[in-house]
Image (cartoon, rainbow, N blue to C red; front, top):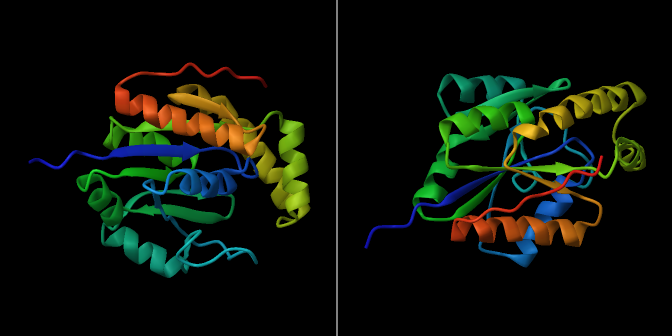
Amino acid sequence: MEQKKGKLILFSGPSGVGKDTLLDILLRKDPTLQKSISITTRLKRENEHDGVDYYFITPDDFEAMLDSGDVLEFAKYGKNLYGTPKKPVDKWLSEGKTVILKIEVQGAAKIKKMYPLSTAIFIMPPSLEILEHRLRCRGTEDEDDLVRRLEIARGEIEKSRGYDYIVINDDLESAADEVLDIIEKIDKGGFILCSIRI
């Protein structure tokens, strides 16, 4: 019997919107989901783990992976590089798994062209004011970096119209349930209309 082809879910949103926490909840609610782990040149935060949150690598190692064709896509976000290792994603898809790829907006557009059957979900903050509050409370960026991230966030929100679905992260559990509903609808060939409250 032929192996069912997996599904690729592109998972984007501005810095501070809660993507990582939301992903943790999704994986708890549905352990069959496969989270793709990105590579990045940024420094590891205190609460992060190498090989779990990201693969934290040097700029030289990043360049070496690019040269060898081992990176599906990459983007510069602020001062740092982020990318998606290609081999694990293709392996999981061939095994019929649902792969969630947390990815920057720049990279999502590239992946959508390479994998036209992928589904793009944008995680939206309830407002820019709430997003700024979350970033400040996180305390991981200096003022210059925070201002830069908010400016990037405005541009990302403008580009969210190109996504298949928009989920507003006002409440983590509710947002996770909405994402799981979307994945279930994809299985059945249906769709959901998501409203924007910005």
